[in-house]
Image 1 (tube, rainbow, N blue to C red):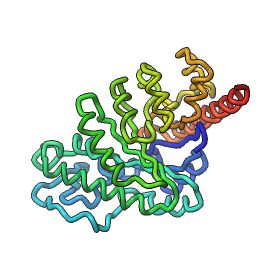
Image 2 (cartoon, helix red, strand yellow):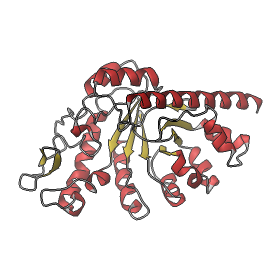
Image 3 (cartoon, helix red, strand yellow):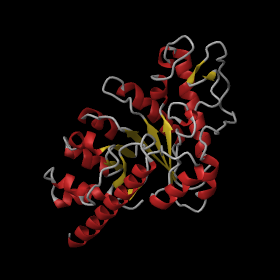
Image 4 (cartoon, rainbow, N blue to C red):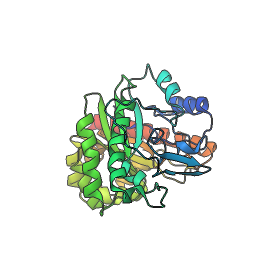
Length: 318
């Protein structure tokens, strides 16, 4: 990856797979597998990986785990289905000659803290089902990875990460990373919610290679202890969510650089940050219009290319 490469988060507002893929490959430097919840309810982030989860049931617009038919299966040699990722097969074909792709998987904690069972209790409140869900997501993630021969960025989406659960959630995801780790994989953690300085310190010391967050929500916190950030950058990357969730805004190409300069960072410090920076929107764009997504992609590209040019020019001076 080169400094200031840019990619998307995951969800898009398209209902056509072909249009979504054409957009991804035309407007994002690192192609990502698009998730299209406007096309199908089951493409919403909570449900995408539950297609063949035992007891997973849909009644109208209600999706839940039916306790009467939940029966754990052996997962080690299971053949997983991925039709809930409607763009997957076409993305595999279109990305064959691409050197790097990005995939995103919803963390089991976020699924379990939102998905209900037939008794109206959350999966999180059903210990055996939650434990099975953890194993299920691990094996299904591994099956997804196997479909791509090229290097991959694998992001776990964990908007529910908080001070209260960080010592439960991070070890769970680090266990995934430890078992999945290969030379062609880098692992990222994404959230569009607020991360405190405390959470950043925890994540800096985790097994994650890349941290992705909304810059408007987290810039103050990540710079609260700059030494910890610079230490992390010796081994990892920060993917800045530089286009805020108000995607219709027109942003100045220099906006990211100015945000760092406004924090009184020296040019040398900014160059250190840019050397290990990637860029994305703050969050997925499935809830906005296609025009807003297109404006988001345009803003992202302009900010990323301006930042890369700044890095190269100032680096030459140094």
